[in-house]
Every structure is written in C-alpha cells, then in structure tokens.
Image 1: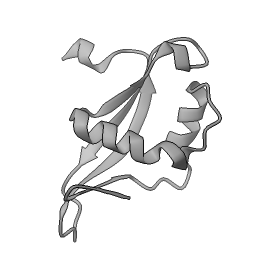
Image 2: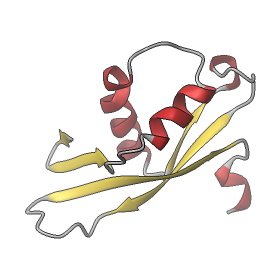
Image 3: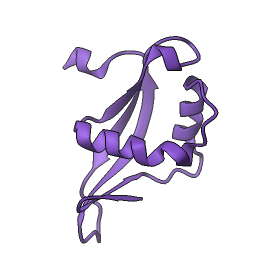
Image 4: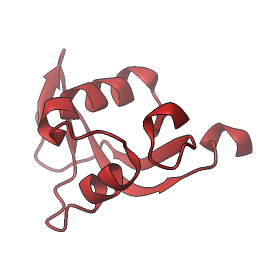
Length: 99
C-alpha cells in the first residue's frame, strides 16, 4: 500500500499472484516486482487510466502490452480517499482504440 498525497493506492491482494506472473511473462527484465510496484501505482493514479502499457522494446514478444485493471474506490471501512487496482488481464490491443 502506498500513500500518495491523501489517497491510498494498492493492488488487490491475490494469493495466486496472477498479475505478477503475467507481468513477468511479458516484461523482459529480472527486476524484483516490489522495487517497481510503487512506480506502477503512481503511474496508474496520475494517468487516470485503468491500464498501463509496456512498450514493445521492453517485452519478450516485441509487442506493446497493456495491463488492465478495475479501479475500486468504495472499499468499506476506509477513512481516506483510496484506489484499489484489481487486475483483470493483459492484452496486446490498445484500450483507447475502442473508446
């Protein structure tokens, strides 16, 4: 969990680590996930989007990859603003393309 200004940010807990496993399937790096988790959350928060992109140059399959999330803001018993990012899936199709 990360506090950005007065807003709490976090990825939904997933005991199967599906998001992290999918992330490493496509990202061509060995960087430990916890080292970049805060940067991903801040990127999602300030972009006001429900996805982030890894460019083709940084993926194993040399294609742009988009990681999609549901943004939950009505978490019970929270006393401050918050955003929980629930992982949906990754895709090779730009989410902006179909808006």
